[in-house]
Structure formats: C-alpha cells, structure tokens
Amino acid sequence: MCGIAGTYRWPDGGPLTDRLTDILAHRGPDGAGRYHHPAGDGEVHLGHRRLAIVDLSEAGAQPMVSGGLALSYNGELYNAPELRAELAAAGVRFRGSSDTEVLLEAWRRWGIGCLPRLRGMFAFAVFDERSGELVLARDQLGIKPLFLLRRGGGLVFASELKALAAALGGSLQVDHAALVASLLYYWVPDSRCAFRGAEKLPPGSWLRCRPDGRVERGRFWSLRDVAAEAQDGPVPDLAAVVEDATRRHLLADVPVATFLSGGLDSSYLTALAARHSPGISAYTIGFRAEDTRFEAMPDDLRYARRVAERFGVQLHEIEIAPRVLDLLPKMTYHLDEPIGDPAAINTFLICTAAREAGVKVMLSGMGADELFAGYRKHLANLLALRYQRVPRAVRRGLSAAVDRLPVASSRRGYRSVRFAKRFLSFAELPEETAFRRSYTMYDRRELLDLVNPDLASTVDDVLAEHADTYHDNALEDFVNRMCLADARLFLPGLNLAYTDRSSMAASTEVRVPFVDVEVVRAAFAVPGKRKIVGRQGKAALKRAATSILPAEIVYRPKGLFSAPLRAWMSRDLAPLVREVVQNGVLVRSGLLRREALHRLVAEDAAGQQDRSKHLWHVLTLEHWYRAATTSVRQAA
Image (tube, rainbow, N blue to C red; front, side):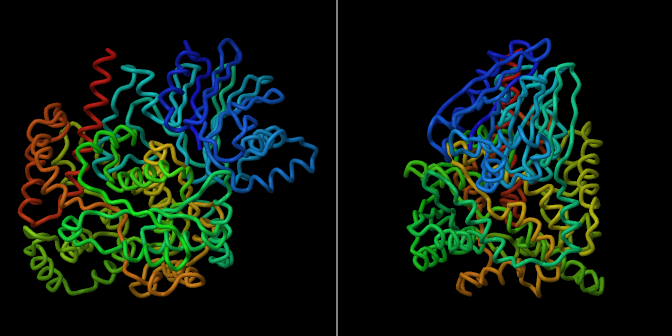
C-alpha cells in the first residue's frame, strides 16, 4: 500500500509532483521515489511514497522503470503468484518478488487487456516512453482511491484529494453540490468530488492521456453486468470462495493482523486467518462503560474475546475515551471530504495501535453487509412491503403512538424506539424512495429546509442520481437490487473511502477479503431469498460461516462498528455543537439555515428524535468547510 502522485504536460509539473508526494508521506513512510521524462511538448512526472509489504528490498522500490515503461502503483495483487508463473513461462525474467514488477510485466505483455485479469486492490499510473502515453487505472470495486484534475491538455493526479487541494491552493473551489450530497448521505458519493474540477477515477475504469492532448476513457469491469451474469449462473460453494479470498489476502512479507469486533464478518475472517496463519493477532475497540450504557450499545467485546480464545488469537483491546475534540479536526483532515461516520475514528485508533506494535497489514470484514444483505435497512425494507398491507387506520394509530415515545432519557437511550421511528419514516414509501430514505439523513423537504434556497435544484439532482443508480440494473429480486445499489454507492462512497483514509493516516494497509472480485461474483449468484430468511439477514454467509464458527457467534444479534454518538453529543461535544449552530461558518456563509439546525438540536435534547448522527455530520462538515475555505482565501 502506498501513495502515488504525478503530472502530465502540466506547467511546473516537477515541483508540483514533489509537493504532492510530500503531502502523501503518511501513506508510505518506508521510501520515496521520483521519475520524469519528456511527453510530447511537455513532461510526465511520477511520484511515489512506499509502504513496503511484499518484497521489502530495493527491487520493489517505485516508480519502477524497466524497458521503456514507468509505473507508480498503490495496492496489492492477490493473484500475483499465478500471473508471475504465467509470465515467467512466457520468458519474462524477474529481478525481485514484488507484485509491482508483476503488474509492470503484465502491462508490457497485455496492456489494458491485463486489467480484467487483476485480482486485488489497485490504483496506478503507467507511462510508456515510446508512445508518450500515460494511463491511469483503478480497481474493480473502488477499494483504492485515485483523484485527478484535467486542464487543457494537462493532468495532475494523487491518491488523496487533500494533496491536490494543498498543492494547487486557491485554484480549487468547493463544490456545493457535493456538500449537499454529503448532507443527504453523510458522505460524498464516488461520482462527485468536494472540489469543482477534481474527480475520482470511477471503479473498474481507465483513462489514457496522449501527447497530442487527446484523452480516452474506458471501463474494463462493470459491477452491474457481473451481478446480472451471476444471477443466471450456479451458486458456488460460498465457504470455499471466502476461505480462498482470505488465504490470498494474507500474502505479505510483514506481520498481518485482523479487526475483530466480535460480529460475524470479522469473526469469520479472523477464524479463517488463524487457520492459515496460526498465532495471528487481532485488534478490537471498546468504549467507556457510561457511554455504552447511555447508548444502549451491545457488548461486542465479550464475543471478540470468545473468538480470540477459541482460535488462539492474541487480542489487543483499545478503549476510546472522549478525546473527540482532538480527534475531530484530525479525522476531518485525513478523510479528504466531509464524511460523518464515526467508525472512521475506530479504524484510525485501531490501525494506530497496530502500527505501534509493528503491524502493517490488517484484514477487515468490510463489504459483507452490502453484498449479503446484512444491514438492518435490508430487512426493514422487506418488512415495509408487508407493513404496507396493514390497514391504514392501524398504521396511523401505530405511527402516532411511536411518535410520542422518547428515544432517550437523561440516563440512557432506547434503541428499539430509535429503530421504530426510523422504520416508520420510510415504511409507507415506494421501493426506491424507501430504500434511500432507510439510510439517508433527511427526506427532500427536510433537506430543502436545511440548505440555502439557491441549492433547491441541486437537492433534486442528488436525489435523481440515486434513483437512476438504483434502477440501473437487470436483477430480478428486491434484495439483490438493494445489495447492488449499496455496492455501487454506499461501499465505495463511504465504507471503502473512510477505511482507506483512516488506515493510511496511521501508515497501515487494510485489506478487505469480502470485496474480492470472486466473492462479489459469488454474492450476486445467491438469490435474495437465501440472503434474508425470515428475520435473519446475511443468512447465506451465516450458513457458510458455520463451517468454522460456533453458532453463538454466527447467530448472535448484529453488532455495531460505530461510536456512542448520543453520549458524546450530550456531554463532550455539546459546547461545540452550540457554537457551530449559532455562529459556525456554514451558518454565516448562508450554506445552512440556523433555524433548521436549532430544530435538530432541540429535537435531540428533548429526546423525541435521535439527531446525534445529523449533528455529528454537521460538525465534520463545519471543520472540513473551514479548512477548505481558509486555504482558498490564504492562496488568493
């Protein structure tokens, strides 16, 4: 795992690439490299920061230059041994054992045709000295990020948006449409970028720059098409597919550990990892007792301890105390864009502790919920279809009764009431609208009340984009339609994004075996009726996990990889919330309406609605916007 950056036919591209590469130092503390070469009437410059994982010698250093090709690469190829053997059989002589060299030689032999053959996570730039062409590519599911900016015939790119923003200064302006999207979702969709002009290379795609200024784009892998093909094929042995992916993800020349929350996904991966790598260690997170009581959070820690004991795993426990005021600005900086999921803090702290113990690689259960219908929203949307058949008078009475119930008292929160209120907020809506509303922060009216009136058309554009993505599929069942929408929107836009930024802030690589292309293909071969059985979500994965995990772990109530937000908001962060709502830059700039924010605070304080997630995201957005607009003013 590394940081990559570069420029192509860009004014002062050399000094700019140096600045970009320096800003990415946290992604690769083990080494730095630079490359430059003429490109038409300009130059290409490639920068690299190395986190050495496979082949720790200088033979794995980057940018890697050989036989007229130069490569700057961020990622891991889990089928590198097979590709190496195939290339060696064709006469390729390798100097080292890195997957970087495998990728470079695969590109030399197959060009863009090598991309569908890659099984892993990657974002890279490859320059051909003979043709003068630069090609950028990003992995199939968007696990690894790649930001770019084009102007005229030139291009600049980097692994992180903060590098582009800092290096280019006041020439980047905040995109208010992306901020509206972040308010709706509490993250910025992968199709948008927080700065105008900048963009994210889409998952499964490539971009080619030619020295005459022409630019070509292409897609080498489509999740939509893979899901459609998979639903018509046989259902594979899911346990075997997941075990094979986990085994491949253990490939490293440095220590590997796992996240272990005590939930199904992390427990399953930890058990499989322990089978193939005895003595592996794991890391878990806990909170202050008073916070977990107030939040009514499940006791995940005891399940993590049971899994660790059963499989001989050394478990490291980390408690999050409320240093939130210190962590908030740090996390906002590292997350690049306004992302309001506090799980990013958990990831950062776990990875920091692992790195201090000498661990560079962590396995995460990320992606299983999206692909196998494991979130509460998936079951809730199925239940909503049944709820709509209940007589209208009964529904009205139930809704009125639930509306009067408090979500919290002065001593504790009531999770069941929070869930009931959330369910009733979308239970009578049409399919796509209900699904989106089941995990977004506001409905259309609430969002229009919150933002500047000039952004009304932007609100409708953001909502239409979600609807278009949801309906763009050829799947037959509702459950898999939800899973596909999540894998295209929720997974790259939120979970993979914060996982990459938070882990790399701690100079740690996180691998996600459930987001392996073969596991994804297998997931969409499973019919929806086998993913949700009765009231049991993720049923197919649970059946697979019974091959190694005890039933008490497999069928335990779903855990949470989150944080006690209500406790933090009512105690540690209350003064900051008041300051931001009353006189924050979002309010003073007119982007958000003070009256609407006051309503959120009042509803949360009264215990009638749980607005803690909304207010946390307002804090993250405030910190991000302050930094973004301050840097623009300073550079102007």
